[in-house]
Image (cartoon, one colour):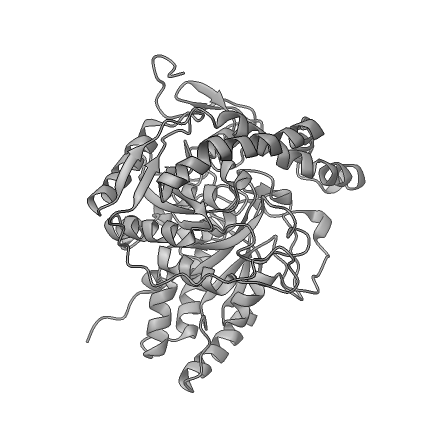
Length: 502
């Protein structure tokens, strides 16, 4: 008789495997949830990935799922422990968006894509942390404290979906959700070594606050590409309450990872970012596995992206400035200490920046990205140029990346593909730095070319498997106490280069 998997192994079980085991009675939803909740308790005081928890309710739901399997009538996602980001509404609970302003607000509806996961049997057991208003590339707030990276507690898991990424990397959730308007799924996925999908605009229905904002998307965060595809097939499709949801649903096929003949372009820095040597090395090694799998790879020269990247960030700042100003003026006693800094940055963006972003986006697509995607099935870049961002970083804190002073915003290589948000983008793990932190790459498809992104991601995962055994998981028991440089301190990341590249 085969040995029973340990609680630790169950905590890292994929959703696909769990569903197979549920159907064959090898495992019950109650047993899986028990292992996940045990792991969640173990990491709660160090990693701190969760805000509100609904453990008792989840245990009752797991027993109902178990009964449905016993009677042969399970739902498609029945019994899978699901963590939901603290920014997505679930009826009867609060989504605080990391802010004390919303501490007492109980939602009367569930966001459409989240509702589909729950109706399919996903067991909503906890909310995951995010920075206040989802507006940092780190994950800390006055409301929920500091969320830390399971690989190294002094480093951020990223933001704003940092709690979801941290929970997955720590084995404290089977699947989770995230949202993304300048990289808030892909950046934390890369920081924590998990999978995250920025769905194309309109693919996954949004709530009424976000559905007309073309930079925003909601999507799955998982530990495997197949789990992300499974979640995506549940979350996507037209919805009567989202005017911008696409009329036709896309069902991702079973992923073979066959990329023979795929044409893949890549850029190491998009002509804009300072990328540390370890990230370059691991990205190139990952690209080599695609070449071995039969894909045709071409490095492309990108000398046109810097202005678009700058304006992509400024567009988001301009849109959000009013909400930030209202919050600071009306609730100064409830703000996290970095929120005034966020407002200062947002005020620097102008209506002219917003208008210019529209013009530049059209020019870039017409002259550069459009022609690129006529030749290639996908574009691959790193998702994060340097993962060593301190856990309690502020937006204007200075990092030194290979001798260059930058902010954490300058390490997330993601915002360009929110400007071009009809492209599907999948972030997948791509190795480790010498300092013991994950590297992630982003696979950018043609507009609404989701399937190509997932097939490429599957090919990478098959050849560079991740979190598949205990030696490839964060060693939570040996992590040291978290340390944080003082705010504003220069934090060195990577090895300084003797001379600038540009």
